[in-house]
Length: 157
Image 1 (cartoon, one colour):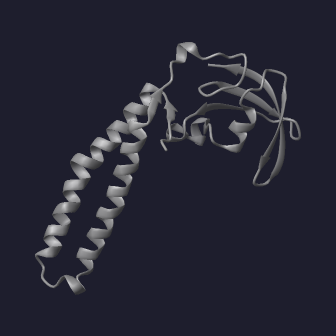
Image 2 (cartoon, helix red, strand yellow):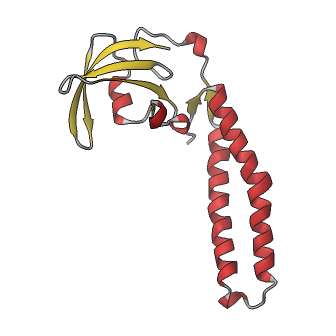
Image 3 (cartoon, rainbow, N blue to C red):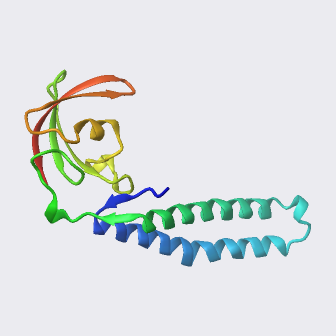
């Protein structure tokens, strides 16, 4: 089962850059640490060796995950994105109907999400609740802290 991940060209480029850094710089550095620790003698009581092997395992897991994400990435053609309903890559201005607070989010892939810059993953409860809504429609969204009510104020690119 493949986990297709939709992202921008910039998001895919960032993933590839991170993967390159891990495979070309960090992987050889950890191999070197393991070799140095191995040269220090008895491996059964060598904490340095154990730590380096554990770090290598974690790095290899991260590399495998990134390789899978890159392999399953699909670039979104931004010119074909519609703003009549909320969908991935849209910027959505919503109003919390309980507090009257207006917030704006851009719905992006998980790998590009960054709440500080207003980018939320398409897999979050808020994004899922907004998908397919039109301007003026209300969305009742269940989040861990309870039920939220939003009105879609604006949809843009």
